[in-house]
Length: 408
Ligand SMILES: *[C@@H]1O[C@H](CO)[C@@H](O)[C@H](O)[C@H]1NC(C)=O
Ligand SMILES: *[C@@H]1O[C@H](CO)[C@@H](O)[C@H](O)[C@H]1NC(C)=O
Ligand SMILES: *[C@@H]1O[C@H](CO)[C@@H](O)[C@H](O)[C@H]1NC(C)=O
Ligand SMILES: *[C@@H]1O[C@H](CO)[C@@H](O)[C@H](O)[C@H]1NC(C)=O
Ligand SMILES: *[C@@H]1O[C@H](CO)[C@@H](O)[C@H](O)[C@H]1NC(C)=O
Image 1 (cartoon, rainbow, N blue to C red):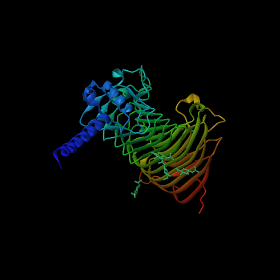
Image 2 (tube, helix red, strand yellow):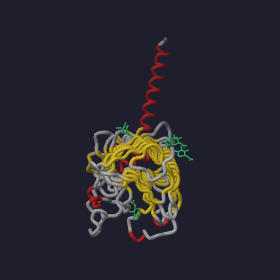
Image 3 (cartoon, rainbow, N blue to C red):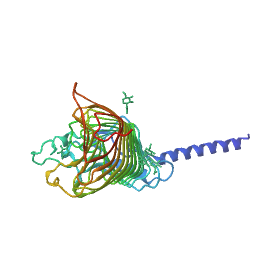
Image 4 (cartoon, rainbow, N blue to C red):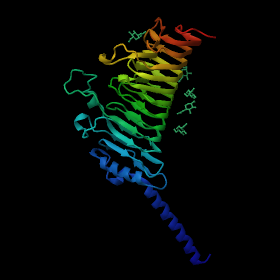
């Protein structure tokens, strides 16, 4: 090789190197480069907004917003809006993001949400990081816990909301101490959440783990959820939801509903809850609807579930009501059709371990109880199953004795 061609090759290699590093630079947006301090005290919101703006506006590669490990970022209520230029966006959350400390530090007029992604498609959030909602200051003034308290708080922020986002993946993130709901999925499609942790005290008010509303094709798997309300709740206008291989407790269990509040219409179908352990929860698998509701819940399956000292392991409550004015008898009701309970084992803390309490106007239909063995959590305690307006069959072993007719 003559010296000039050697120089040419070196030159080429250099150019490629420069090109690659420029490309990497263009696609990685670290909040520290935008002025975030990560000291847990200064407000890092502006740095987050700027880093997001560049991430969302980047075209090539996989634009990645970095929130680095080993730091705590105080962020005020922020919405990360799309649509973004790239069809794939990555938020690498390795550090901790912490919310303002209680209602007195809250600087936004909107109390409903702390962090939100809106109209963002193809988002992946991963990185072993934490979102901490600093909920205690809100719980201390909750109307639910202190109904008489002047200026008590009814609506407190959700930690993370996905609003009209499609194709969302989130894994290995820890959520803790939300003022209210931890994660809200609203108007989204194609959502996959895995290996999440949700942690709040069992006594914290309305701190649901994940609430899904008006969304389809959602999977939540391999997650550990313990809080003061439903581990997962499934609201109106939802379909194709899988909840698998997860643990729930403390909390109120996995709940479909409450549906049909204030005469609202329920459209819920193809719900699959499989391989879940409930420990010390108030409910296990629950469907709850308001008497004033309309619409249908259909094709629901609860299978391979263990209950340990659960108050109401299996419950359908079509008489749900938490304020007396809207609980009068009506001619409406949500029709529940096609619910399979299969391979459910464990212990119940109340006597009515299987409680199918269905609407007088629209009986539940297509209920199947199959291979269920529940024992009392109290030594020597006796359990029963109870059916009210429930139509269906039982198969295999059902203990306590099934209130639905057995077929072979
Ligand atoms: C459901 O969502 C997943 C992403 O979580 C996607 O891969 C899959 O194609 C979607 N299925 C349908 C039927 O839309
Ligand atoms: C839910 O599970 C069913 C059966 O295993 C599967 O066909 C379906 O694709 C899954 N849907 C989601 C959203 O994961
Ligand atoms: C019922 O839901 C399951 C997923 O949970 C789905 O695979 C199945 O196709 C649904 N059945 C009907 C009749 O829609
Ligand atoms: C339920 O408990 C049984 C027996 O201890 C175990 O084999 C099974 O894997 C457990 N199910 C889940 C969903 O963890
Ligand atoms: C069914 O619901 C009605 C109305 O809330 C309630 O009075 C009744 O005790 C419930 N039945 C069972 C077995 O829980």
